[in-house]
Length: 260
Image (cartoon, rainbow, N blue to C red; front, side, top):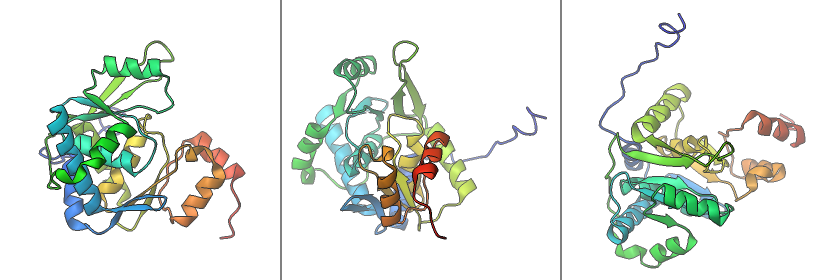
């Protein structure tokens, strides 16, 4: 029963689409919906699409990015991080998140072990921004279902860190399952607070953009501050948030009590 009944979960999903395709379809449906909120900065779906298209074009033209290349991101949590993730995916590459607080030795190890074509940090993003309008805003999609989507490195607590790869098919399957189960509409506000070096962050970063929802991006280190989380949840009317059990316990124990 465990093998044949409980595990009877096969679902036929389209085999010719990626998460980028799902995002582009949502852009065409809700171009003026707010996609990203980071403090005072807001991007609509159209703006996020255009900026990530421009970044993809920048990467291809300046670094000859090809399908399945690995591109690092070393940015604090912000709207730039979101643009970078989608720009990398649209270029055909996979993103490799790197925490800005990592020691240089670990950063160098990831760059060498992953054979990164480049790493998008603040300096690199500024180079792109200074010439952003010279790159086309038109859609770019160079990935397919078997292309790599991201590579997240383990902590290395039992040895050297290891890069764990996931392709568009795996990510696509996970996101469509979540949407079929949760049935999220375009009136929701997600909170993105999980550090992007953890695998659980991936659905937080991508799922909102295939549903027409908004992604509220927490400040760097904001995920550790209960008072800040309360404030941003209230201010931005967050409706969907993910906690690991330990963090949820701390949040409920230390948060202010509601009256509803």
